[in-house]
Picture 1 (tube, helix red, strand yellow):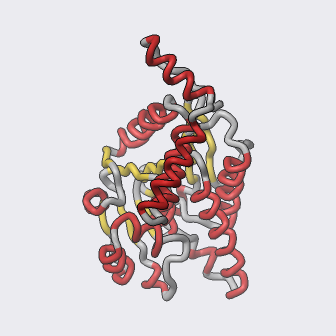
Picture 2 (spheres, helix red, strand yellow; picture 1 turned 90 degrees about the horizontal axis):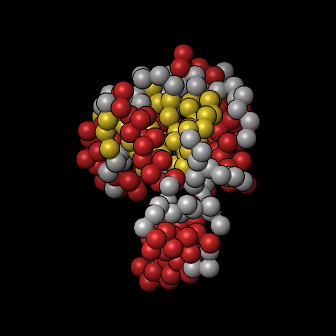
Picture 3 (cartoon, rainbow, N blue to C red; picture 1 turned 120 degrees about the horizontal axis):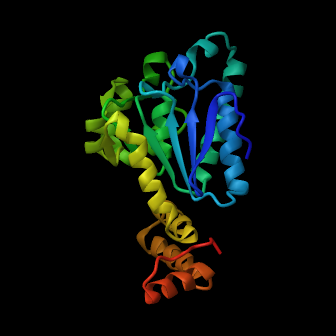
Length: 264
């Protein structure tokens, strides 16, 4: 994977964690067409070949903004056709994010409005700084959430809360997001990334095949009936039995040492 992107920074932390930083701080990391293309390339690349990566952290540059949503200055000059064409890029990017087999953790370090809030909701879970603010204000612009706001956000906080937030366009803070179930943990601005990295390292030390299979079973199973979900879980479980990682995990336990997983 290349590292010379125009609108994002891509850095490895340790051997198995990839930190993807939205990097347009002069416009609150707002998402323009190029950022959509850059993120699409990253997530499609991970879906083709994650190599030895096991966890992805998605964050924003600076301490004021995670992502302010779509770049409205760029959109101000767009024709209807141009707007639709740009949104197709965003749709493909979100589809690639949702399809990523690796755990994706959003480290929300400030404002997460519109598409920024949708990025957080599309991640597997969210850690946020105390000053983080969230909103889905699209109705105040005459549009509506179009990258999972009515779906991923609603699944995280529930139908009635999602309607209240989206219909009003009102912002809410990290404490409310934690209470509602959008956020898993709140940390200070200084501790946010170290806390997220520590968790990523813990996840990365576990069996990578196991973590990916579990992610698939949870996400897909929740779209099914309980009986179908249980059947899918067992089928996924059975695929782990003949793996070298399963044998290594049991052997390491019996030898009283930490397992060394290879994703095989």
